[in-house]
Length: 91
Image 1 (cartoon, rainbow, N blue to C red):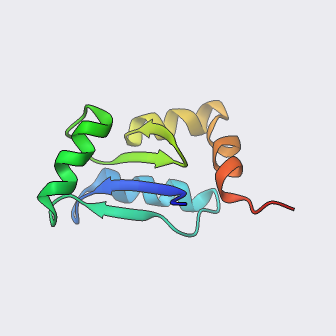
Image 2: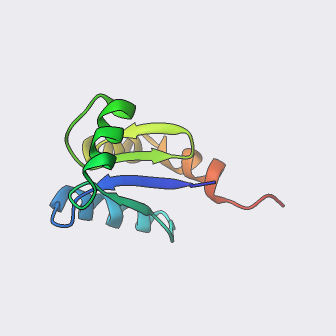
């Protein structure tokens, strides 16, 4: 299962900030879907999210939104449990 997926472009500063934020929570792998290299993935992103800006982030099956949405979840304490639910191996 893809755990953290981020629709991105190669030069998006907000995408880079999202990666750094996720890494600060211990996320080691982020599957990046580069919409500037694959036009079909851009269409897929818009269908899945209703948005045309990047980044667009999914954690497991949960749609988080963009960088601002991700940072709000971090500030409110919602991000860690969401990540732990999909990124922590079962014991």
